[in-house]
Amino acid sequence: MVSPTRRREEVTQVQEVQDLPKRRVCRILNQPRSTQRYEPRELDRDRLLVKQMHELVRQDPRYGYRRVWAMLRADGQEREPQEGVSSLTEGRFQGDSKAA
Image 1 (cartoon, helix red, strand yellow):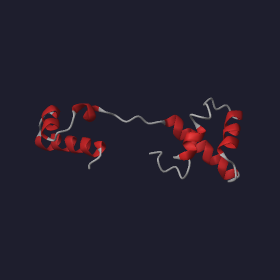
Image 2 (cartoon, rainbow, N blue to C red):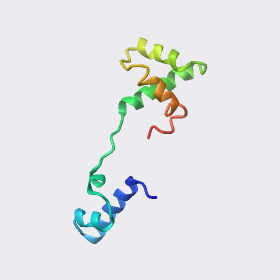
Image 3 (cartoon, rainbow, N blue to C red):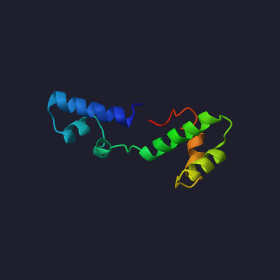
């Protein structure tokens, strides 16, 4: 199975090489045009939050997400802990592997 990102790249490549309209290339490659037009959003706010969390944990690796959140809140972070810090600690915070 090919990812949507890779399929978007394939459509663009075929379009440039064959000099065909995007609509026709999408039809030939069975790629929905809505998927072709999709532009993934960058979550700079999350990236900044994860960076701040890493800096705090480097100070003392024993800090849990509640302590990290308390320190971020003291620094002026406006997020709710349930939607922000705890969800980031489950994924991106642990090695920052999903923050691409």
